[in-house]
Length: 169
Image: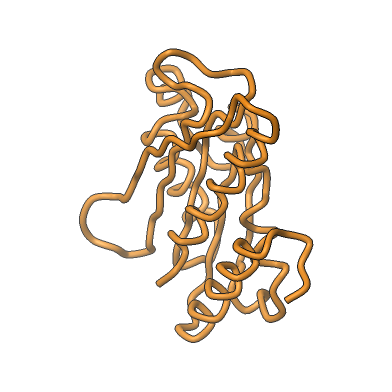
């Protein structure tokens, strides 16, 4: 498969498109540290228009609030790199789209920007399925490699893979 993106990302995106298309399921993305890589990976695949409903790149806190309706109180209390913020991003993406499932990603890709509590490589994810019952899904992960050469790209690659996995049925 010829792709602009690494083979592992392209292969997983192909699964996301095929498996969601088979179910007639539409997806939406709300991305911060990945800067649209998840949506880009999906659109690398022929037939992706049957699956990708829309994608939001909300890199700034203002964009998260304006485009996705993330409350300022969540950003002030927990920060943009928090499960609460990621969940609110996913909720906003689902509410503002016709998608059946939304995934959100926010993190510290580095090499700067990390703190003691949220070091470089800290990435949070949330997935929300329309009309699902139960607690929202959220996860905090730490990806190695943010300080070294190529570290930022490696963190973004790993975060993109994780988000694509969350979009599998």
